[in-house]
Image 1 (cartoon, chains in turn purple, blue):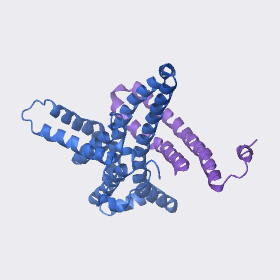
Image 2 (image 1 turned 90 degrees about the vertical axis):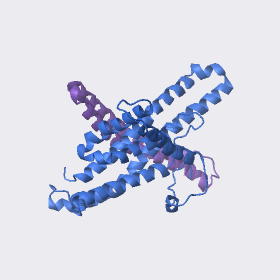
Image 3 (image 1 turned 180 degrees about the vertical axis):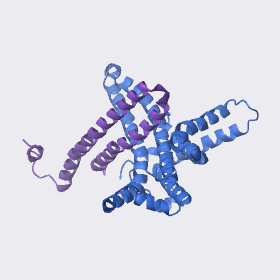
Image 4 (image 1 turned 30 degrees about the vertical axis):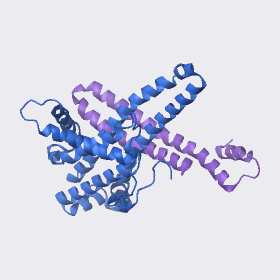
Length: 96
Length: 246
């Protein structure tokens, strides 16, 4: 069963007489979870791969550890930004 | 809006908004503390550093060796004052997250990181124009080595990513990290209080209190790393503007 039809089924169970605002809040709350969950997948894999490769590089050439570490932090910062934007979207959906 | 996500209005750059809260206090302290430490350090005479001067020299040495030399080389040393200011200001704005009675990172409000990111943005554009003239914009917008028929695709992407998204992501990276850390600590703290009221032993058995202690230690590291990352990205942007074709 597809995700959207499951969601429709769940939403069909809500009691009658729901106002538009309440419906919107429920939709926002459920999609906020999806927003952060989906946004965390890619950067999670990316940072894991990046740090793993950096550790490997440092193990192979310990004398270049400083350079590798600096470059690793820059890469982690760029990758992490995607997850953080997902987090901001989560907060905007949930509370704004 | 909640959680300080709103962008402060433009007038607040020159005009005091009329409220003095904890965030404003932390911002002022994170200007004052490094200034006082560095002034005290500068008063010392002699070759061997003692006390505050050791702290000041270690900080400057750290920024010089770990941030400037790997990203910009010796050319970047004249941007040392700016980057040391960035580092210390962001660090003191972050570390209040774990200091009792403050318990709030000043950088978890959009205003502070936004202003710092706009300063870095104005800085790297002006450095690029100063060192390369208007050819800076040409080399950024029409990167050499790209086939001509790709320019309609590449140029809009470069405009967006370099001049619009870059300051935004630079600010949001710091802001969202500190806000996420703060919410994490708040969650564990509230959980501790709730479980303490229910049954005292659960707080320790359920790893809630040990978790709070562990995450507090983790957030000390995050404060330091985020200050480092913010500064190193500013250095990378300025270094990229010095030599746009490399």
